[in-house]
Amino acid sequence: MRIIIEKDYEAMSKQAANIVAGQLSLKPDSVFGLATGSTPQLTYRILAGRYQTDGLDFSRATSFNLDEYVGLDEAAPDSYHYYMAANFFNLINMERSHIHIPNGMAPDLAAECCGYDQAIHQAGAIDLQILGIGNNGHIGFNEPNPSFEATTHVVHLGQETIQANSRFFSNVTKVPRYAISMGIKTIMNARRIILLANGSSKATIVAKALCGAINPEIPASILQLHPDLIVILDQEAAEQLAVQDALMF
Ligand code: GLP
Image (tube, rainbow, N blue to C red):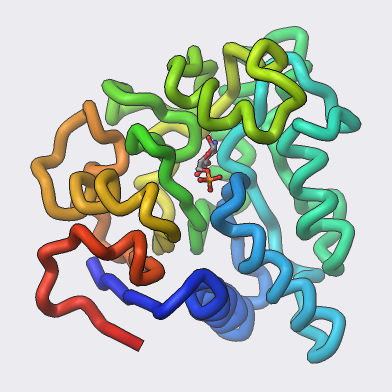
């Protein structure tokens, strides 16, 4: 694990964007795993800016999003389809046929999950997975005590996550109770993972996930076992880390 501590959210986002851009230069047909939430928003905006000003080329790249709510269609402003279009896909030149997001409206959700893992496999596996972390340690929508063996599946969202994510909805009753999420195994199969966290509200969970025991109660703690994990934090999110050798930029 490499931990990079940046001075603020903007510097954290630039560092993440640099790694994504570097990956694209090395392998233009890279397969990316993408996260939603507020954490990676600026990373996407920086990358979109580089496409627009420097011609950073996504045309051969492929993406798979981590998750989507069950019961929200693509046009719903709170869906992750909508978020990704607005924050990234409408602003870059990735082929629409290369973009994958679980379909939370699929009539057969089990078949949707199974097909999603097959599509990742057929694409040659994820080269670079971007992750945020939930306040309860979830990654994707893998809530506390997931099976570490799970592939893409339907999850029942916990109350803490429903409450945390209600800030994106008009009120808490509108937050779907179920979602489709890549499983821990799907995530761990990525060749490289970047975990992003900013803000003091993430400091406790970041310290538990990175420095505590590997424990299903903190799903992100499994990332300690990943052979190529880069953690990029701002100073606030890093404030409870007892890591002496973290890189400071
Ligand atoms: C959501 C997403 C996660 C994301 C997490 C943190 O629940 N499913 O993929 O990492 O929230 O969100 P934020 O970045 O807004 O703190």
